[in-house]
Each structure stands twice: as C-alpha cells, then as structure tokens.
Length: 400
Image 1 (cartoon, rainbow, N blue to C red):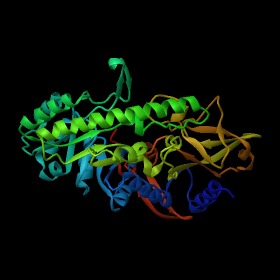
Image 2: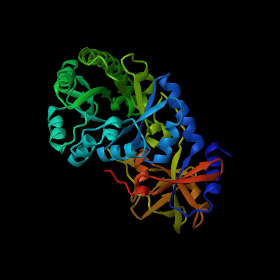
Image 3: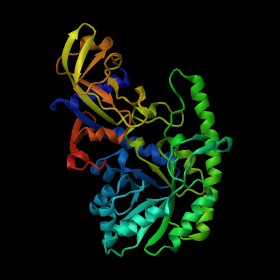
Image 4: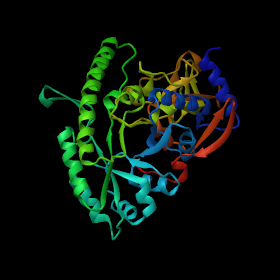
C-alpha cells in the first residue's frame, strides 16, 4: 500500500460516521508542517497569516508552540474580532477603508494596543483621522515596502502590484510623515515577496519555465535583500525603536530569514500545504487540509459523479486554481466539464471501484479559502476525529 493509499484508508475510517461533503485537517501533518516552518525560520519568530488558516482553534494551536508569535490578518473587521477574542498581536497586512472599524480602534485602548494597521499613503492617515469619531487612542502603524523586481528602467515588473513605496527614499519619506503626525506611532515595516514566496519553481513537465523562474527568483532575492536592508536603515534612522521588520512567506522562509534586516517571518499556507505548494524545490510539506465529496452517480463505465466541487481559488484564472482530486490516486476531471457548482464528473482507472456514497478526497489550490466553503473542520489524529471546530464561516464571519 502506498503512503497516499494508507492516508485514504485512514481518512475514510476517521470520517466513516460523517456524510460528505466534509473537510478535515490532519493534525499529524499540520504539526509536522509547523515544525518545518520553524526549522526553516532559523530561530526567527513566525507570524501566522490568518487568511491561510481561517479557524480560530487552529490559530490558537499553532500560536501555543514556541517560535510562533502574532497574527497577520487580512481585514480590519477581522483584526478587531481577533483582538477581542484574546489575540494580543495582530498585524493587518492590507490597507483598509473601514471607517467604522477605525472608529472602534481609536476609541478602545485594548484594541489600539493589539492591532497594527498597514499604510503606504498619507491619504490613508487622513481617512483614519476622519474616522476617529472622538477616539483619541494612538494608532499603531506599519509601512509596506513594495518588493517587486523592476527591470529595464521599470518597463518590466515582476511581482504583485502592492505598495507604491518601492525605494528606501520613498519609505523614509512616508516614515517621516507618520512620525510627525499626532495620533500615530510607526512600529513596523512589512515586505512580502510574493513572486518568490508564492510562485513554484519546479513546474511538472515544464523544465525551461522552471529554470527561468529559479533564475528570476535568485535575482529578485539578491536585489530585494539589498534594497530591504537599505530601507530598514533609512527608517530606523528616523524611528530607532522600530519593533519589527516582517518579510517572507511559506515558499521563501529560509531565504528571508537569512537577511539580517528582517526580524520576523510571515507564513500560513505552509501549515495546510495546498496544491500550489507542490511545485517547490525549497521545501516539501505534507498535505494537511483536505475535503471529501460523495459519489452520487455512476453515469457509465469509466466515470463517476461527485456532489459539488466547483471551489476555484483566487488569482488569475487557470487550471492551477482548481482543486485537485487527490484520493484515490489517478482521478482526473472531464475536460469538457471540470469541477461543477453542483456536480463534478471524474474519470480515471479508480472510478470503476468507487461505489455510491464513497468519498473522494480533494486538495484545494490555496489554503484558507477552503474554509469559506465549510462551516467546520474535523481534526484527525491517526484514524480518528478527535475534535470538530468551526471555521470563520462556521462562526458567522465572512470578512471578504
């Protein structure tokens, strides 16, 4: 029996009492992935990206481990909810225009002490001030450095379009603006290198493309390390008591951790290890988050139909954004239909052994987005479900 076949038997036994659709997290794999993140971080604390987990119980589990410290959130409403739930170090990784949320933040000492917001433009400070509604608490601020690699005088850009603060001089100017502004305190810098951390460099069947990605990433790492160090020096000259410099992501943990300027690493997807992380040479994780759909039809020889399955991930549309049939091995989509909202035909040699009611296990393309489809996660240890915990959705929270 292969390791994957053994996992299928284990998951089927653990969930035999549960009807599909159902989502699980294999805690043995989850904990092993957490250990791997810490190993690659080389002693620097790892801040957990909440959008990649979207389950309070699992956020608490990983933060109980030495080496993990703080959360990186994705909306202001989520940040305030997490702070009220007892998380005392929440870095909002994206700018917000949530006026009501800023009013709450500026009016509550506990929230103001726990939550740090992201800015990269003086207009964002203006919005926060206009939303204070009488609140006088000092708002903790982090600046985001754009990490994209610019070539040919800026005519070619590699990386996400995020912050407008690209050069050390630009981020220093913004730091000066914050430092001079009453009601704000600059505490950190964030720089997320998504073109390194979030792009696989070992694409199956595409050796030339894979080599090009590796060459691009090596060049991008060198350029960013120098620019990030210069940016941190420029900001620390203005704000010597800067609390943190955050960088990295699951795919670049060990490279980012090697930079002296970086004080903490961000990661989250590496806990679940969705399918997009199958194409990396820098690490190998264990798939921890899976979902199962039930076989409901047998339209003919060589095909079965499962219920649901149309759970695409965000990003540029493409086959790599689709969930992948994982267990049993050897299943594939019908190219004329793909995964459907209500039903999904599956082809491949294993289908003739599948019976009505059997579970087919899938992996989502991305990490936390799976939790937007399920109200609860069944936590599996060995071949038993040892706990069932709500996702954000299960707690009635849909932040985006």
